[in-house]
Image (cartoon, rainbow, N blue to C red; front, side):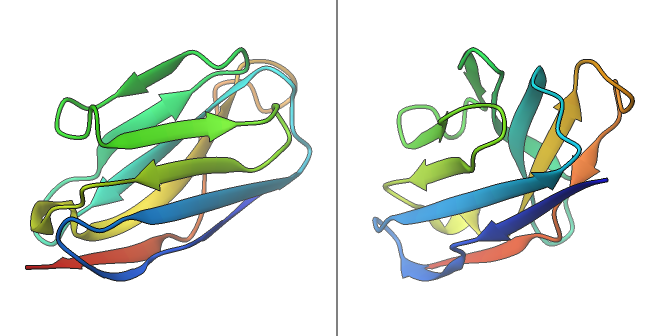
Length: 120
């Protein structure tokens, strides 16, 4: 009953910027954590950034200082602003939500992903 839809991926040159959006809908519990993950070819899916309901954030070391995750509230879109992009940022980026209460407590919900390609 939770749906996540990503948008904003595309092709960009190294040093450029992209802004990803994740729009949630459905039975959303107010206390939740949202995150962005990515999976590059031949690699495991990894956490990029996450944000909780009171806007505490956490970033992978590889993106600190370049990426910013934000949200307006628990049921509004989440964003990932990506600056100074590098070829190694190329991956499919997935939005994730984990409710911390309600009927879906502890469950992970995923979007279908959006492709980011960074050329050199």
